[in-house]
Length: 122
Image (tube, rainbow, N blue to C red; front, top):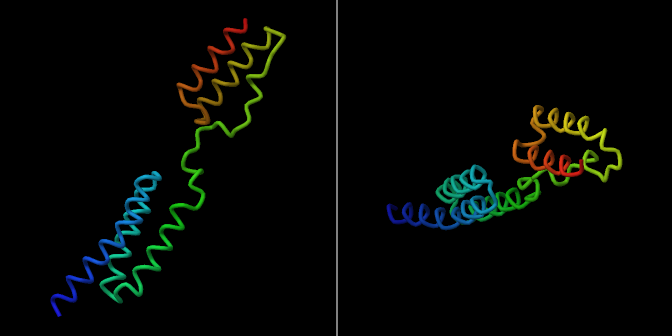
C-alpha cells in the first residue's frame, strides 16, 4: 500500500510538472502551480485516470488567450501621435499623454518616448 501511494505521488508530480513548466514559460505561474497541485491531488485520489484530464484542463487555461498576458499597450490605438502639420497642437497632445500616464494606461517609459517623439516634430 505504501508503494502505491509513493507511485501515485510521483506520477502526479510528473504529470503536474507539465502545467507548472508551461505556466512559468507563459507568465502564468500561479495557474501553473495550481495545475501542479491539482494533478498531484488528483493522482493520489484516482491515479492517472484523474490527473491527466486535470492536466489537460490547466494546459488549456494556460494557453487560452496567452496573448492577453503579453499586453504592451501596442494594440491600443493612439491617435495622439499621428503626423501633425500644426505644431501648436503638440502641447495639447503632450497634456493628453500625461493624462493617460496618470490614469495608468501608459507607463513612464512609454510617456517619455512618445513625448520625445512629439517634441522632435516641433
